Amino acid sequence: MGFTFVENIGYIASLGVLISFLMKDIKKLRIINTVGCCFFIWYGVMLNFSIPIIVTNFVIVLINTYYLINPRV
Image (cartoon, rainbow, N blue to C red; front, side):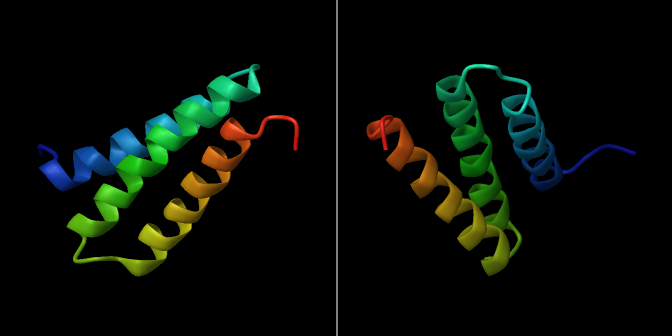
């Protein structure tokens, strides 16, 4: 009952996003969330290009990046 490589990437992605919401510092939250989202993008690609997973997480990465670059907006 082992996990496949693809499943492990999905679990890592989920863990990263979950951990990000435990952060009190918004900058740390956005950085960790971005890493989790990048794993979700990778996971979506490995699931034969699951467009909903890829697009949603790509947009979240863009939003996080925007606010990390422009923190006063």
